Length: 126
Image 1 (tube, rainbow, N blue to C red):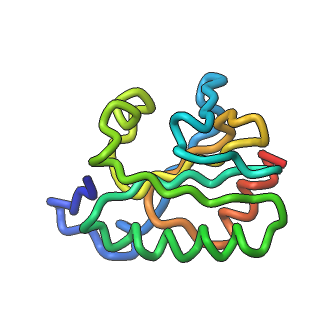
Image 2: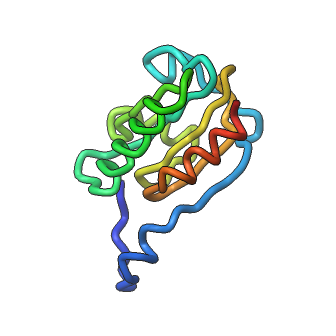
């Protein structure tokens, strides 16, 4: 799902993330996630098998989940969950959703995030 640039953009520009706020009150639960929500927040990562930025994003989100009590990281293979991908309008990987304790989407970002940005986004969820 990762879409390389056809315009020859620099690596720095390709790494930028696009961030959106609340997703119309959409809520995800254990059925969609395949597991429990975090006590305070959940970081949901949509990835694909050959996506290099997805690997780096996994490390960042796992680190943050390990640092912040009550935060859980869940990774979803986009190719194996196409119905959910379509429902949530996931158009590229990695896409990260930040969920509050009830599973409401409070932030959405595409591209490889920085640790500081993920921690800041968690402030909207907790």
